[in-house]
Length: 84
Image (cartoon, rainbow, N blue to C red; front, side, top):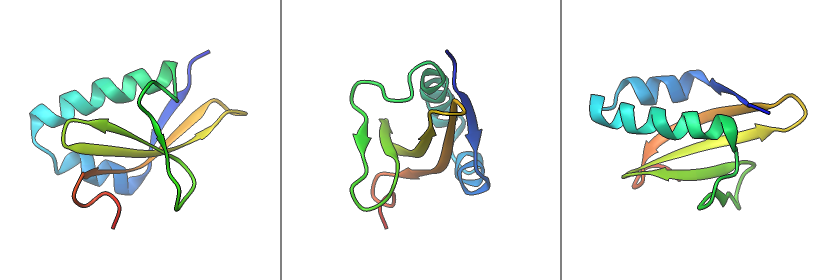
């Protein structure tokens, strides 16, 4: 059962501003989320709803809707900026 990945506008802007090499790496991580939205190494966020996975120096912040099989990616930030 595959999940649909939906990039919210802030996440799309974050992705567009990254170097091409990082975009390719993050695209692979996003593709993996479509088959398993809670992979090994995922962290549940404590301050807000959602999850976080690492992709190199970047963090992908997202929410999962299991009823509709959707993954909403709302931010993709460098690790030093991800939680501000």
